[in-house]
Image (cartoon, rainbow, N blue to C red; front, side, top):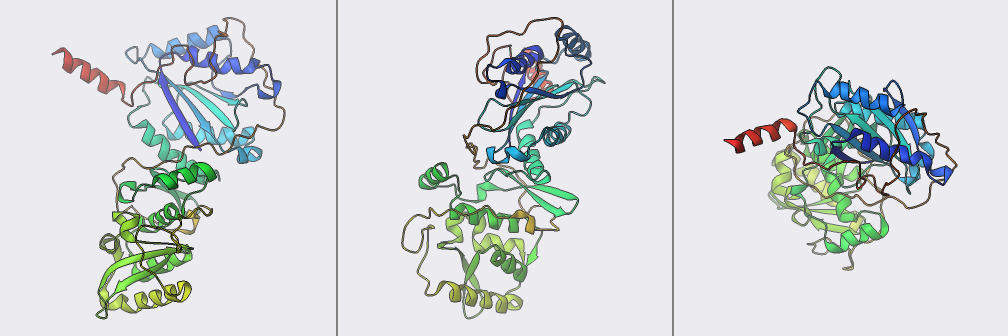
Length: 399
């Protein structure tokens, strides 16, 4: 699930964009109003209700929150209106919209299922939903809702959601600055096939394991092998470890080739490791790896055994196998690689007729562009900065 957010100044403009979708020529593509807490769909009354709430916070300019939640086309059959309403409700509450005016629309005019959420940032009690770091907040929340509602996850993200117990889901930063970015060939492969390279998958699998509280060396080895990642430790006769190599199918790479976090010197900081105690477990792991892969050749940058780049397709690792997690070892949240490519361009099936809500006053402007993010109506994209901070900056500049 991918959320695209806009914060703007015109509620009626954003509403006009959504209402225009009710009159599309193709009946199967007409939008639906799934839910609202406005008293009426009369445009005059809606504007009156908005203005009554705005009077409590007249200094707030960008009071409109307009977001689309986008899903994979292959999920279309299971995304009933009730399912989408549950997702929308959880998203709004997770973003802080617990006592606000809102509308939820379902659109059918794209190559994938999506809904639009339109809300007033000003609460009924005069409070306001902060927009500070709302993009990070939205991304972390999206990962949690993917797990909660059994949605197809975004492969590359700043965050990852883990089911820590039957009734609890935790979100952890992936700490992507500690892994090497994908090379040009890998990015092209992802765009071409829609699948991650083996290198990217190994990084994700290891992050799932390393983002747990300190575990024993034996647990680390067992979890890696359960994810089909096999380990070869550079172990001296004294038991001293000076490096580690990872094997996954026909891919192999030293820890440094995956990123600094995967070097032995970093991994050992995150494990409950004692050289003498764990010497036997490491030696046995080396034996299993050698038995599986035979005569091992020197490895470095992550090529397949015959030197080709790895273009094989592999399913995304199942994070649900990991349970009872605590806080992540690395807690700072840096920019990460993200796969925002569309999951499909197949046309939607089924004929959906969305009846335009009854209105008794006001006209909806027909001069609409095709993209809601570029539509008119005074919707303005604002920086990810809350209004209070902007006021402090203005006061500082005026001195």
